[in-house]
Length: 261
Image 1: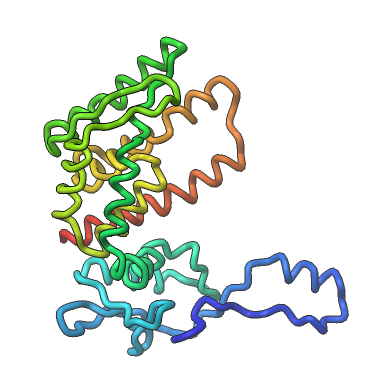
Image 2 (image 1 turned 60 degrees about the horizontal axis):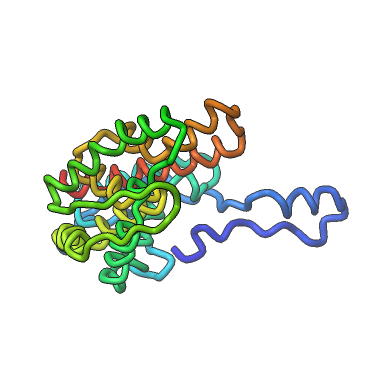
């Protein structure tokens, strides 16, 4: 099913210049061409099929998932499409494509990128003031650092402001060893997605482990933004971007949960 997300191309010969301009600005989504999205057993995995035909990734690999629960999440995204297929509304599919085409051949590089995030983790950089913000950061972030010390054996140094603090090699080794136990393409793809969205490897690992709820992790990642909006008001565009990121974060967390189902 090549060209699944190529979309329709505006007609350059349309005599109405306004229509041509408007068409070029609109996202061009492909029309839904299938009736049923289902899951089928293939080898040792589960494939997503549309009207009995296998879905393929952009890299032309068969979209096969390691658990039925994860395959069903993708199939449900296909089933939920209306007249057109809107990729932004299919975050689990996009993550699965990334896992197969991008993460699978580069798992160690992806793992090390998460370790790199941990070396300058968001939770380690604290405000110098005002006092209420300092207290809020401590109350919200310290429990995650305590979890990392207890569960992962990773003790992090803290810094005030933006001055870089070097984390101990044994701390980063502890993060690396924890990730090595999760070195499978779909889980690593999900962890990397949550890490890049939140800016914190520790928050991503805590979410994946189920140590903190999705809402608590999300609020911890956006503590500074919440402080700013409380004092200066909300930015509508920033809130829309956050909603989009939250959708992708939730999809990554659901992927981790489906892998363990």
